[in-house]
Amino acid sequence: MRAIASSPRHGRSAAGFTLLPVILAMSLIAAIAFLLNRDNAITVNLAASQADIERARYAAEAGLQAANYAVQALGCGGSYPLLAAPVTDNNFGGAAYTAYSDRAVGSPMTLTSTGTYNGASVTLNRANVYAYQGTRKAWVLQPDAATGKDTYLDDSNVTRNFGGMTILRLRSARFESLLQFDLAALPAGSRVIPWYDATAGALQPGAKLSIYKTAASAAAVDSIAALLITRTWVEGTKTGAGVADGATWNTYDGTNNWPAPGIGYDARTLSTATYQVALGWQDLDVTDAVVAWMSGVYPNNGVWLRPVGANITAAQNARYHSADAAAVNAVIRPMLVVSYLLPCGAVAPSWFLNPSKDNRLNSASVNQNYGTTTTMILKGPANESRTVLEFDTSRIPSGTVIASAILRMRVTATAGATANPKVINAYAVTEAWVEGTGAAGSGATWNSATGAVNWTTAGGTYSLPLVSGATEEASGLSPPPAAFNAGWLTWNLTALAQAWFDGVTTNNGVIVISTVADQMTIPSGENATAANRPQLVVTY
Image (cartoon, rainbow, N blue to C red; front, side):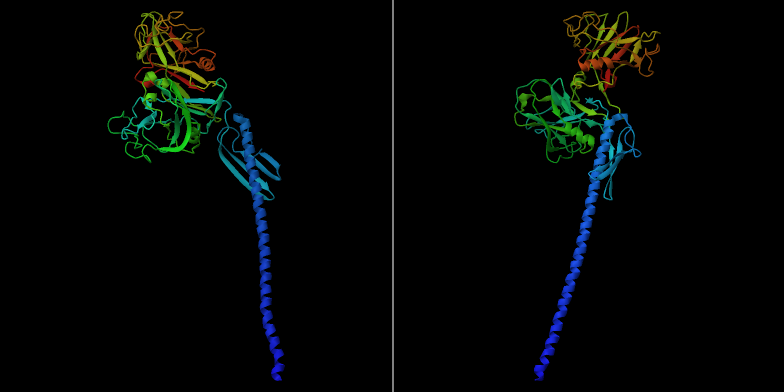
């Protein structure tokens, strides 16, 4: 009976021990639920805070855009929004922004914008922001042997360098060409832009590479591709013989290898152009390359030209003048034409043109042609000698506004110097003429414009009034003083050059006529010393 009587006590004791774990479990669940609810609340708050920050960031970005718009609208006139008078919007979708420039005028500048939303604040800066001059400009770069860099590679002569050749070559599965142009003269921040040519009725590239084909050839259906060169390279001086001192098919400097033979370019093609069979300019769009170089996105190692397809063969004669071409071919060396907007406060680079043709007209030898002589003479009025020059401006884009065009000629010696100021005037030539080869009947003389057709007026036909009188470059005196007998003389041809570019006046060049008896020697466009040749210095 006791045993029976004691059973309830054991049963109650067992029930008590069973309840304790249940209570503990319930307490743990409650604690976990509390923590989960608290974490959910924190997460919600963090998410809300992050959303506020993002909204503030969007507002700050909008502020940068608004400030940049205000700056560009004002252009080079200045009075940009500053900290004291910023661009603001207090209800940008419920957020707000305040934005301003660190300078009131000029370029480059730093824009700062602060966006706020629901207590969150984000400040952003954008450095090196440029405002631009309103007139589109063009820059033409056409280097000579001293300043140019180009060569071609030969898959059949993989160890030979051709950096000293006067030509560049392209041929399917054999010849490929490399060119590089120095863009250092183009002001930092210049913005390369395509432009619409109303005359041609077409959009023109922001940067155009042109190479001049030496002769017409048979038809070809293939194209030429332009690609970015991926590393530095050496032009070299060889003409296919001797130990290579520059790029070959195998190497980029005569010693060190390209990543693979004949492959030193980015495989992504910049542009292609249908192979031109006619004599003349072959143009390729290199806008993307110049934009990448100017922005620092890609190093300027130049452009690699490759035939596309197998049909540009020896019969197609894909030969082009190189930067090493002789002086007589100076105007058809490789050329880079860049269309761009100039940053406020920057000065446009100048383009130095040598004459496409020049000549001496001598009243003492009225039928003598001097088309290939390396010097010309200025003398007047007895036994008069005049200089006629023409500059090829055809590659400057139409519609270009000329800031200045200055003719420079260097006097290297004077015989029979007089005590008179050197009144020497430039006039616009009104008839077409031929430079000639020096042979009788080959070109312009005192009497003849072409060797076959006479000038309307002997001594060269020109219009009045004069375009410009001479200035001594060193002193700025016009006319040059009596003591002048050597140095640079200049003539301001800006208005005439603008008329040439606009098509208002036919470009037959200028004639320079001296009114003094001093016999001045002037290097011609054929002179061996390139720095002494006549120049037309164009800024636009």
